Image (cartoon, protein in one colour):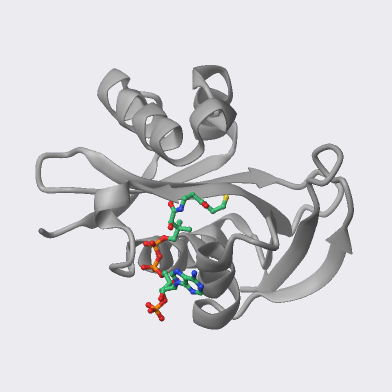
Length: 152
Ligand SMILES: CC(C)(COP(=O)(O)OP(=O)(O)OC[C@H]1O[C@@H](n2cnc3c(N)ncnc32)[C@H](O)[C@@H]1OP(=O)(O)O)[C@@H](O)C(=O)NCCC(=O)NCCS
């Protein structure tokens, strides 16, 4: 299966449905909905891996950081379960980090659940992000997060 990496420039009904599917598969009740995904598409950047039929199988969302205009925040990355463990998430993020440079971005930050070992492996081991902070109760009691960053 050949996947193509792309930036989603504007909302499209089919691609939006794909993105919402990927979200639900990855995050269940915590999935982003269309009211977040569409603004991210229009005003942030969403990168996707698309199969030969044009179906998105992975996506990564970035928002601009108003406080630090050279920084972009990786809100989320998710790969459909059937495509995980095949380097798709890493390759999509490599594509996205490279693409963000054309918008003047020189640094990417993110937060990650310290027990999400797959995501940590992708960010730290495979992409070279480093842990710059650790925040307790970031999303509510017991919802701790590691803050990571990488110069691009
Ligand atoms: C996190 C996610 C995006 C990674 O995408 P992916 O395409 O599966 O990742 P890759 O195949 O590029 O790399 C996964 C790496 O994690 C490693 N890994 C998997 N499970 C692991 C574990 N329990 N402990 C340590 N490393 C682990 C794999 O070995 C692989 O590294 P390798 O290629 O060196 O063997 C994907 O698993 C996903 O969608 N998860 C659900 C959503 C999520 O948690 N998103 C991130 C938080 S916002």
